[in-house]
Image 1 (spheres, rainbow, N blue to C red):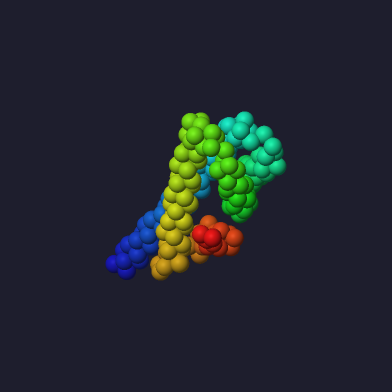
Image 2 (image 1 turned 90 degrees about the vertical axis):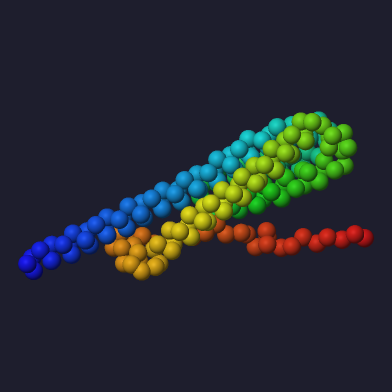
Length: 183
């Protein structure tokens, strides 16, 4: 009789262990998928930028330094190897794109150009998709970290070598509130 009880307990522990192992696998895969979606959207944005630059070039020929800055920032984002590098390069690219759009304000014909307007719309849509992908990534990290840190998941996480993962962090420069002045 005791043997049966021990056997049932061992079987139950084994089933619980299998459940937690599979759950960690699913959550890790969800995190990898979320990160991949961020990459897809960043690549989509990077692919739109050369078209945007070519459209602006026709109107703002003397603004070559901004064009070069955007191109360099785009290349840095594409060649970034890890999440931290991508986030940093993305911040630089966003700053360069901001300057490019500021130039467009000086060219009414460019602002009215349908190609430029469509590219701006696509970039804006892509920015929304990047924000959504980041949110999805951080949500996946939250679910995973809760599983790793809460009991009894913490016991199985240590058994399976699972550790807490990091969220995508916003760079301090992106946290600064822009000053608005009507002078």
